[in-house]
Image (cartoon, rainbow, N blue to C red):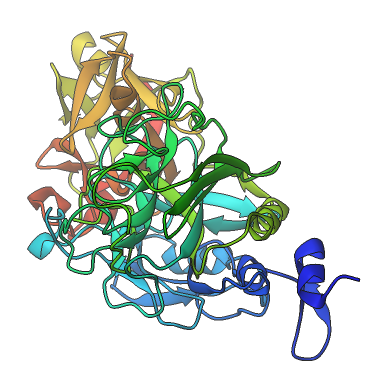
Length: 504
């Protein structure tokens, strides 16, 4: 006969204090397997069947007020509607990702380390609260969209593995959002934000970096960031058993114990886990035994390397080395959550293939339209009596997003094959070179205009930043950021544009 613990694992159930059986969450399953969660982070759902506390905190740009977002019910999906209501007509940032384990291992804005972040005093940027919308079992929620320069950290932790102690971790990620920068990580890192040597980290890495190890194909890959190396197997080189990831939602697992570690992964929306590597520690000095320090990072490397991008939905760290059976049950629970995509755009619809002009709505500038002079994207006064050349410069063809088909790209009417893109946060008009970077930089998502007029248009890869006119030049700007063009004054007006049939 099955014991209760085995029954829970087999059926995905957990026994409550009142004696009833309810659907288990990932951390209930880890606990039943003898490897309890010591950190549990998610902006999309509760990771314990009984958890009903705060999942994360958001801060809105209009007045810097914060609110916390909880599940719709104990053990349930985050209340995305509450966030939408709180953030209407302004920008919102994720300021805290709460630890559901009860140990207080919350993630907050990462401080500087070996690398400096882009914000004041070298801190990293915070993620947009609206950059990664999804649904779970039909309920809208939001993930954590990490742009280069964005990161979260906790250096003063409780219960995480140190030294060569055993641990496990998983994360649900966007398998299509990545780059080759260092390093999109979630897991165990240094407590001083510096590179303190081989074996001082043990974290999930996701991306297509080829600087250290690789898997099969062209990537992206799941690897382990063990400090001074991204490992796909026993050596720092290639592991052909570590596949390129193609699923939109991806379950990533890294676990380690004395002279043993493993990589496992799966489509987070269907199917079962596969083992990409399971064996001894890397055959390189410093990784056996390990010297883990126990800090927790998200979106960055252990030394605060900040050039990576990716999207995080949920993840945990455990005490002890989970069994494959426990992880298989966790994967079944993730699949049962039914992660699915939802619209990245809202507000007045833009029709792919149509030709539009975009008029500024800021008082005193309402005769100005988004246009270009050579490669410079700016605003110019345009009317029916303007020259044909100027009308063409202020006209754009709406295209399916080059870097994400759920959003848009804007092709110049008078220079076919050239698109608006951002470069160092300045908008320019460039001919497409078909690179991944160009396509992402030329992709924008629209929403209802922040001042109630027309559309606001955010950069897909930097969803905290919207297309803005400032001194008649165009940028992607953050509400109240460090650059002059990020000034909070008139931000909502400057990022709101009314689309009309194009002049040309």
